[in-house]
Amino acid sequence: MSAFERALHHRLEQQKSAGRYRRRRSQRDASVHTRINDRGMLTFCSNDYLGLATHPHVVEALCDGARQYGAGGGASHLVNGHQEIHDGLETQLAQWTGRERALLFGSGYQANLGVISALMSRGGHVVHDRLNHASLLDGTRLSGARLHRFAHGDLSGAAQALAGLSPDADRLLVSDAVFSMDGDCADVATLARLAERFDTPLMIDDAHGLGVLGANGAGTLEAQNVAADRVPILVGTLGKALGTQGAFVAGSHALIESLIQFARPFVYTTSLSPALAAATLAALDIVQTEPERRAHLHHLIQRFRRELLTLALPDITLMPSETPIQPLLIGSEQAAMALSKRLYEDGILCTAIRPPTVPPGQSRLRVTLSAAHTEADLDRLLDTLERCCRAVTS
Ligand SMILES: *Cc1c(COP(=O)(O)O)cnc(C)c1O
Image (cartoon, rainbow, N blue to C red):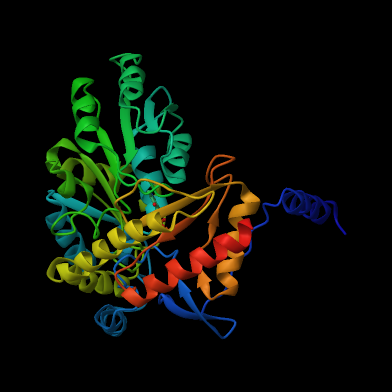
């Protein structure tokens, strides 16, 4: 074995002995009623909150889009990978979020790297909520700007961090709108007030709010009644409630033009598949015209919370959240893994989230609900959780 291979094996063994080795599981399709190893499985961990990944209209639009425009874009947006269907989707996304323009990216990860690295550089300062998504941290690292973190939700901590910065330095205040591992929401109006007070642009990543929150599904800003112009930089993803893949940044004409010039994760990558753009337009239409999907989802969320609390499961805390992300805080990695494994044996897939994704001692079962779940699916989750919890803790 070469020294290189030996080093790889050594590192993998360390990961295994730390109990942190991760494996993928192949499921048949993206539906909540799927199959794994040819066994029926009910899933409660997907981000496909409205069930659009397998919706017949979205799938048909994808097939039709591929026939009309091609499966792939063929080049980057600035060479000749940019098609009319991309313009159409960008226009709709801008309108939906109430902004002048929107710009498509290959993924939310790339969008966050792209925005922060385009806007910030060495000598700049980026102020983060401690629980911000990894891609926002990585974007800051890539930019070379200094990273400042305030305790989760501690807006006086945020004010302190901003007050400590030189007024001449480039600054950016960044937060998730819905925190992906906790399910709670940032107080966007207060963040906007702070940003205004310290004359700092505010960037909000609403990956988990768009499609789900607000009367029109336009996300956390709509739900919290925050005007679009108070959040100059909005990032949204297409792979969660919209059920497809990719992401977008929405904002002013000058912001979008700056990203087209300076965001390397936009410039140096193949354009989003035009077929996916067509599918996303179909998904966006459903999001805007079928509010009953959101109503059903919010009904399931409330039912889950109410009935889980009456079960009074031992050693489990339901975290405060009004979004489809409903984490059950367990604490130890081993206990969270054991519960996830018991559920799996009973045909329910809900993955345990553990360090380094969450801090040590805060391992959890991250339950996510979807409009594709039925009342009977929720009954089954609650029954199975009760049975498995008592078995694991007895
Ligand atoms: C999922 C997620 C991303 C990454 O989006 P992808 O399109 O999956 O790369 C970015 N930010 C937040 C808050 C997310 O939850």
